[in-house]
Amino acid sequence: MSRLWRATPLTYLALVFAAVLSIFPIWWMFVVASRSNDAMGQLPPPVTPGGNLGANIARLFDNTDAYFLTGLINSAIVATTVTVSVVFFSSLAGFAFAKLRFRGRNALLLVIIATMMVPTQLGVIPLYLLMTKLHWNDRLPAVIVPVLVTGFGVFMMRQYAGQAISDELIEAARMDGCGTARIWWHVVVPALRPAAAVLGLLTFMTTWNDFLWPYAVLNDPANPTVQLSLRALSDGYYQDMSQVFTGTAIATLPLLLVFVLFGRQIIGGIMEGAVKA
Image (cartoon, rainbow, N blue to C red; front, top):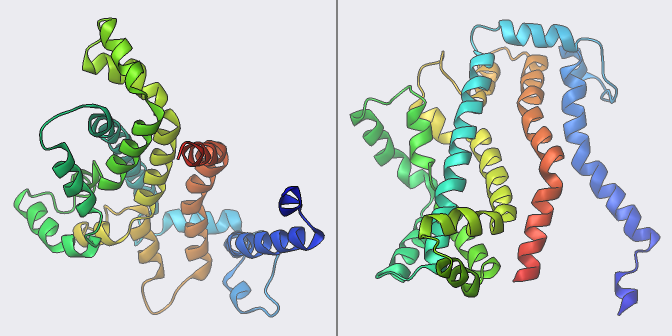
């Protein structure tokens, strides 16, 4: 059995090859972002950074068609707000579905699971009409409010809470005089921390990269998210690819930073859930 887990030189070679294939597109994006537009047509393509990164960044933020700085700020506000809300409400609902007994619990859980089966595209038109009636078009609440809680988050926290928190622990807290709110804060939240970290990071990355719904509801070019700013950079007959790649590189940096800082926690939380399962 131990021989099944023993890595061979071929295994390491395959891992190195897969790592190079995964990293090279990101690396080349930063290479082109530091060069002029001529780098796009060079054969063989350049693989080392150039000296135009500062100039490209200056031209990017001076571009009055993209409003890139506004897009970065708006995306940071939207992604942070949605992440905090999803983790908060999902932990509350997940705890309730996993450990509290109330009428209609299973039926409500089925409704939440059913919402995960509906394609996002089917909800665009009804949501757009609702945002129009609320006069939220071209405003950030139209991007934030519809995703303040997600079925995936509730289901994930419910599954994790059912495995990570024992009924005996809940009963012991009740015997000590804790109400439901104190049990959630002092018992449930610490136990759900690994799953909350995973959910929060996945939610942040998904919201940061979202394009369809902001594109539908934010029609004011002066108030974009970062993905809409990137689209504005690639519009038109002439495309300044060095600006496009510079904007893409800057928009990717927060995601890379989040993954570098919290990647181990993501993997640890996923592996802990797999072991519990």
